[in-house]
Image (cartoon, rainbow, N blue to C red):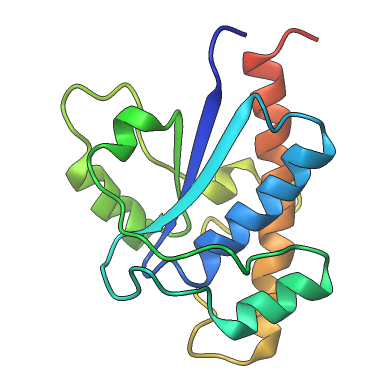
Length: 162
């Protein structure tokens, strides 16, 4: 491998789904001993929650599974993210469409849906749990864990000599 691989997860406000994906993927990367080779971040397509901590329900659900989101803060995605990150991964098609509109012409990175990497979920989108109950955050975690494992597998296969 010649350079550090970088991943950013993107949802609407960057307080539920994308920070959950960041925390889960970071945990998997650390467990694999690849923290020095893979950098991870998250962002939102909207500016609703810039500087905010993740939703408390998302934090609680993640904490129960051993993921720490307490230090994460919301930020908005921008054109520069397409230059900084090798993987720009949207949680749903609405946010993917927004990302497709802001990809700069000089970018080699194109946004994709995060669940493209899922092995056990056939859905294409991670649903937004914000207006639902606690079970929505558990469902998000199930989907994110699945896709995060698939993503790590792909990054290993494509970017690391085994």
